[in-house]
Length: 261
Image 1: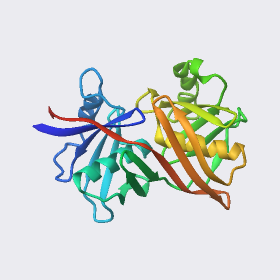
Image 2: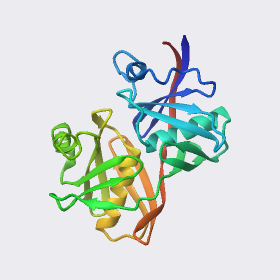
Image 3: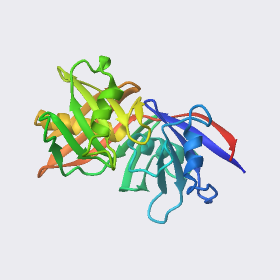
Image 4: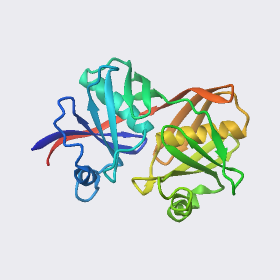
C-alpha cells in the first residue's frame, strides 16, 4: 500500500505527518512507524503524527516518538500539525485540536504558529542539585542550568539523568540551559529519540517557566534560542499556577511524497 506523507519542521524539530481521517494507516504497527522515522532506512524524522477526525474539535493529533511508540504531547509537533491542517482546509487561522493531554488552541500567521499549552501547576527542585528542576509541560522534563552549553557533551550528561534510578523506567527529556544577561539558550536530549534534537517545544516551555521561577517573573514572554532557531513562550502566573502558556515560532512544510508500506 502506498501512503502519502508530508514532512514538516518547527525550528529543526522534524516530523512525518499523515492525513489519517479515513483511518487507513496501520497505527498499531510500531515497527513501521520506527522505520518511517529512521534517517537511513525511512523518511527520517524526530516523530510521526496522524491527523484524525474527532467530533470534539477541528481534529485529533496522534503523536509517536521516533522509536515507534505513542508518546506524550509534542509542542513543535502541535504547531506543525496545526499548519498542516490549515493547508488541508480542515481549520481556519484560529482553531483547536485534541491531543493526548487535552484541548489545544492555536493561531496561524503565515509561517508563525502560536500554540496554547497546558497549565503547569508544579515545578519541583531536584533533590540533589538545587538549581535543577523537574516539571510536566505535556511531557516530562528535567531542566539543568549550566554554563557554556555549546561545549557540553550532551549525550553523556543527559544519560546520567535519563537513565538514573529515578527516571529510567518512564524516561524524561533533559534540557540544558544557559542564561546570561537575559539571553536564554538551550539544548535538549529527547527520550524516544534518544539523542539531541535541534528543538523541543515542550522543553522550551519547561525552560521558560523555570527561568521565570528563578527570576520571580509573574507574566511576560521569554525568547529562547535553540540550535534550530528561536522560540518564544508567554505566560501568566496566578496562584502559583502558570496559565495562558503559549508557544510561538515558525512551522514549515519541507516536502511531500509517497512511500510503499
